[in-house]
Length: 110
Image (cartoon, rainbow, N blue to C red; front, side, top):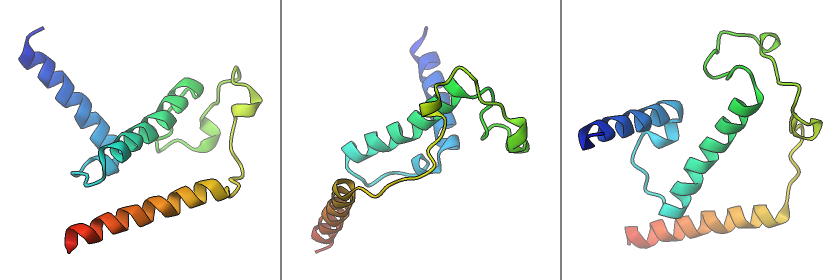
């Protein structure tokens, strides 16, 4: 494969990713670590949907929920998440991250 062909393929892949997730369309000013987590956070649910559903709901938005079928070979423990419980550790982590980001922004502004 020629380098120009490889570049075209890679650019098309990035185009598909940016088309799918709006957060990746514009330049990011977040730290590299956070950017990596953002990409993983977009890809994991996408991969889960592709593995466990016959049809990706985002690709066929005109379908109703009754028309979408869920594969039966998925264990019940992974079917759905109905409730999200508050976790003090994660809440603290989120608050610390927000404070760190704000402090970093303020220090650049000054």
